[in-house]
Image (cartoon, rainbow, N blue to C red):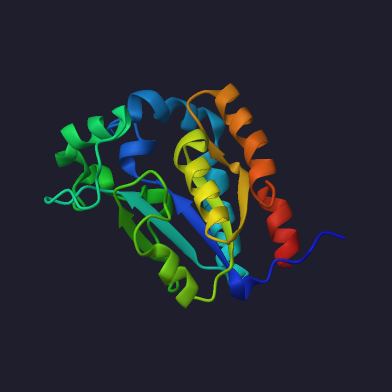
Length: 202
């Protein structure tokens, strides 16, 4: 029998469900909007978030934003350099930084946390999760081989039990998506489908 997930110690970490990543008009729309649309991941993840809330699990959304002083942004990769050059599009109040409308209605225990790194666990979020009593993270988001993988590995190194939710993540390239999930199945506590998570919470 699969081990139970304790709702009171579990958090859904919802990564980069923002206009800049998901929508055609967003900064990364040319790369990601069509794979996201065709995968159906927004609908699946929205249903999963709602079901997790109903089971007593809060959803913590992370947004990649760049404040006027650039915050913790370090231009040490081509990805971060490109974002830094287009930082006006990533201001916290910019349209592209908004959580997509399908997920914009937050539960009373949900949080939205901004950072300037690829890992959603950068900055003070681990401390906030500890204050919530969380030791288990369920990851949804885009893209699998970018923020999801970076966050999953980071969380595991920090001592969290991490489960990527395999049908609630996607990437620009299906092969990269599959390869990333295969690697994370070994590097974390294992990938689970949304239904497998809900069965363990039930």
